[in-house]
Length: 491
Image (cartoon, rainbow, N blue to C red; front, side, top):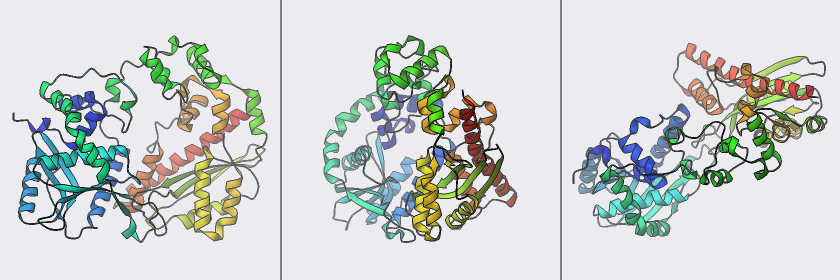
């Protein structure tokens, strides 16, 4: 049978089908329902591509099979020609068996008479189960296309690497044994997927944990249309138990029994059913009693890439490039200072200097989910000893409103989330919504900073990004101010 190009089973489609057969069907037959990748997702794809290109530098004699990702026929042809020409290392080599295709990141051998070594490149810092399956699918197609391979490896990030010495960026980990075991079962595993494509019949598949594991499915909005808001999935920390209710046909909030829950979860269900906010006034007062004025409301924005951007940093290290700080005194006077790095130089020294110069020697430092700010401060203290005493002191003075909200407040609009972007608009109102900001969350802030600092934008565009970043970070600390003032007035 001749299969149209759109109905071939590439490795990525097979991986999607193994996660959910219905997802594969929708990918092939109803692609218009697929959610488009947002800017943050696209940025992750782009970084993965950068890592792939950087990995190729480890093999200076390698040959790139240079074809568009959609032009499988050309890629297969160029692969065959390169092998015939005696090339021993290929990048993006493509093979086909029946209607299955595989594009291999790095395919190498010692000489024309040696078996191939399959190397998959990932931007993760360790081998995961899905990576084994990934390599097994590629290798199964390769072998069935008539090529011998006897070694399989995963080339992944070594987060012990310190820039600028990027020769140690990758670990090449031998995964031959688990891949061989997986290859043994591949054919019977993917046969049902082949039948889905051939029969063009949509599988009956309920939603489940597989919708988000190991990757979020782009058809969630389509398959979850029957789930109302709020639902059992909007109960804080419900986890796997939500699926136990769903399996019994119980997912609407009004059908849940309070007696099936305890403590804070019971309170959350009650709030969602009655649509009335719950507040534990005494616990709030007790929690705030230890806070010392003036209060410094602090929020950091950081960048952490697989390829370290600055000397002395490691892969995925969170490098701060921006902070906002509102200061509230006992007489309710509010002042503000901030820092945002503008160019491609290392921001850490100037960031730390501005922070140390702006924060006083006394007063609690308020950070929402303070463990993050504490970690950044301690990293800076290690890397810049001249600021270490002050930064260690700051880290010891951190207080956090997040546990107060988790333990003492629940509003119907939280919908299971205690993040500040959920809590602030629910408690204070839409004036603290992020919907009207150009930058609305941390990943967008990272992308905006990268464009501003490393891009080739006109000055006017850079200034626009600068002001968007300032507005976003300032919103975070202002939201904390108003939330803490609200907590303080509760009686």
